[in-house]
Amino acid sequence: DENYEVKCWTVNGVEQPGKTGNTFTYAVSNDCTVAVELWGVKQDVTLQTGDGGNATVTDPARYGETITITATPDAGYVVDTITVSGAETPLYQNTNKANGVQTAKYQITAGTTFEITFAEKPVVTFSAANGSLTASGTVDGTADTKLTSGGYVDFGSAVTFTAAADSGYTLDGWYVDGEAIENTDLTYTTAALSDNVRVEVRFAAIADIPVSYAVNDETM
Image (cartoon, rainbow, N blue to C red):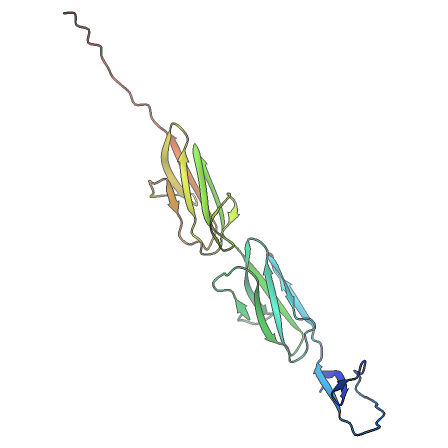
């Protein structure tokens, strides 16, 4: 079969070093058992990776064997899909957007190209006018991680914001992705995130309160 080649020859179960050709000559002096072990011919494998990570594959990849494609995301990304080029359905799809290394197995019978894609985690940007704003969420599996603006959180993480006004200012309003929201508290928690979010809190100066008074000076 053209898909297989000699792996080794054995005599009485003992592998004969360097004997990998299609013919084997052995000087027989006693009864013996000669056997040949075949394995699949090496197949060409190409990995095409998008931005956000890298991938490796079982090497060598031999005909008929089940190989493993291993995808490793960069910081701020998760593995999205591993697909045989041209196939409509991914070989592996990270439906839950789980963190870390992901793998897929495939029985190879011909040269094959695999496409590996990565998804960027939600990026959180935030700011405060006339005050301060802190944020925390789940990052790389660790809950309640303090965030800096422009940092990422895991898919499905909610983010909690805590605002504080500068002296002489009071809460004016919260804005999410540029739109005002109904919230009069100094804290705000998003829903579970699947996309980027931008949060802003604004504070307004406390208006001076006019005070009227009179002096009643009566001489008895």
